[in-house]
Structure formats: C-alpha cells, structure tokens
Image 1 (tube, helix red, strand yellow):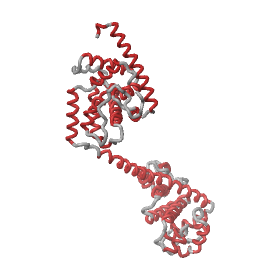
Image 2 (tube, chains in turn cyan, blue):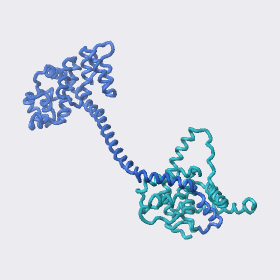
Image 3 (cartoon, chains in turn green, yellow):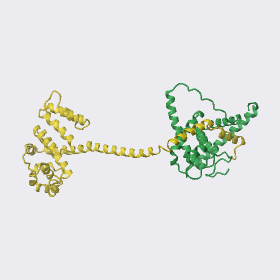
Image 4 (cartoon, chains in turn orange, red):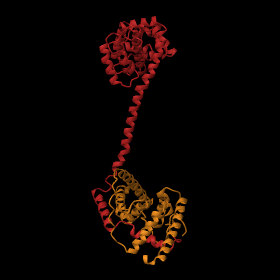
Length: 195
Length: 269
C-alpha cells in the first residue's frame, strides 16, 4: 500500500464506517459509528473488558456535553481518542486509590454472552492476546491504523507524535503480528484437534 | 495492509466484530445517553465558561490584597528607617530639639522658620524648596498645624500658592512623620507627657492616617514611660492583637514589663 498521510493505513477494508464529511455530527451518529472504536481504544489503553462498557459510557457522556466544541475540520476519531484517553487516565487514578483501600479480591466479572460464532470469538481472543503482548505505544498505533482505519496524520494528531514515529511503531507491530499469526498456524498444524 | 497474511487479516476482522460492547450493553449505553440528551442537550457547557472569569477575579482580589499587605509592611518600614536617620541627625543637637519639643508640647505657636525645624526636614527637602519654605515660614505659623507643617516641608511653595486646603498627599505624609518624630524625640528626652500630647494631636489631625501602627506603638511606649503601666499594658495587648506580626511587636510587648517595671526610655523606634 502506498503510504499517504490522508488515506487509511490499512487496505483490507476493515476501516470503520465512512468519515463524517461536513458539519458537526449528532451524538447519535457519533455513538452509532464509533462506539466500537471507543470500546477498543479503551481496551488498548489497558482497560479490562468488563470495564470498557463503563468507559465507553463516560466517553459518550463527555461527547454529549462537548460535541459543540468539536471542529469538523479535525479528525473525529482522533478527538474521540483524546477523550477516551482522558477518561481512562481518570479511571486508572481512581482505581489505584481504590486498590489502596481495598485489599479484598473482587469477584470475577460475569462471562459475556455469546454473540458470535465460536471461531470468530476465538480469533478475536487471539487478537486480543496479540494486542496484550504489545507495548502500549505500538498497540495504540496498530489499533488506530489497522483496526480503526485512521490515517497516519490522524494518528499523529491524536497521539501528538511525529509521523515517522507512527510509521515505525506500526511497522514493528505488523512484524510482530505476522510472527504471531505464523505461530498460531504452526500450533494448529501440530494440534489440529484443538481447533 | 498488503503485507499481512490472510490469517492476520482474519484476526483483525474477528477482533473488530467481537471486540465491542454486547448488544445489551450497547442498548443500555444508548439509553443513558438518550436520557442525558432529554435532560438538556449540552446543558453543562456554560458552567466551565464562567470558571476562568471567576478565577481571574479571585486572582485580582488576591493580588490587590497582597499589594496592600506589602504596602503596610514595607512602606512604613522604609519611612521608619528614614525617621531613624533623622533621629540620629537630631541627636546631634539636643538643645534645639528640646526647644522644638517644648514649643509643640505646650501647644504654643511654633516657630516654623527656626533653623532647628528646618534642619529636621533636611532629609526630605530639596535645598531650593527649603529656601522657599524658609521665606514663607512666618506665614505658615498662623495657619493650622497640619498646613504649617506641610508648608515648612517640601510642599511649602505649592501649599502657599494653592491655599491651606490644597495640601498634597506627600506633604501629609511628611507632616505625619514630623509629628511622630516629635513624639519620639519627646519620649527619648524624658518627656512622655509631651510625647502623649503630640500623639494625641496626631490622632486628631490624621485620623485616617497611614501611620496608625507607628502611632499606637509610640503611644504604648509613652504610656508606660509616663507611669501609666496599666493603660499601657491594655493598649499593648490591643496592639498585639491588631498587629501580631508588626515590626514593633517586640518593643510594644516589652514596653510595659510585668509588675509595672520602671520606664524604659531607651526603647525608641
């Protein structure tokens, strides 16, 4: 894929819904199109799956209050990323304080209800495993680029890092993904009954 | 992502499909959001906009208070230093000083043009203006005390031209300083009664003065020196309550020692 700054860095057709072209979007539009993005960003920032819903709710309440401040010339996903990161940081601070107070182990979260096929869920779990193995810098760039379909300039704006850093982190993450998928294939060849 | 293997792409696709809130959670999220929308779209947006103005106003108030505090703490201190220098200068001529104290302490007309009084103003009076003040000193003696003191200082020419009521603020300060200086000299010269009289006059003429703290401190010292230790102790306590961090606090506190100790005339501002 030729790397231009304003085209998504992924060519696999996985990008999120079409970008909102003009005018300020409504809260409903933002919610419908970007709920999954916000949820996954929260996960990439280290939020547990059972808490990502709460993060998403807080993010969209902020969106509800602050949408009038959004400039349509900016990248909406980059703006959402900034809000999500702030919400996550605040929750992490609160969580740290709470952890200091509570020594008891919290009960495990109830299992999520199955909504997709077992294979799909397993693949998603593998992907989550891969993402968890990345350091956060690479994980966030990879998620925004190859999962959410943001352009390099949008990622650079959201993360406030140079474009060169975006590309280098993305390259490193892709190499690791390739190695990871090769290991998965090798594992399935060795133990076909496990699939 | 052309360099991805199909399995990598499949992993990403699966992740995008599954890694999101459940349908139930999504419905719950939207219900919450819709309720917020109903309650008032962007209802809280006005609140933060007021905060910077409030913060700015509070900051300005604090700054003003701080500057007033500084002015109270440092300006009198500087004036006090000047007055100390003046006292040293006056100490060189005790006879002339006593004569001036007598004239003021007894309430009689003061010789505004006497060399002693003019010598007292040497620190603050440019030579040319002082010469002008000397020339008009006789007229000043007939006017009110505050005006005459102002005229005998730096603003003599301006006061004579503009009338008694047109005493500049700087001249008021000089007049205040002169009175306090007289009270201090009287105290040092063993005449606490005269010092109290001068301070009484200061209180009448400069009720809204800038050097209230100095006057009160001197009054405590004068009372104690005059043998009115009980009153001095009461006023000392009041002073220390009003000005706990005053530079005079130590002297005021020790002006009337316990048991009404003898007067300590060496304590001088």
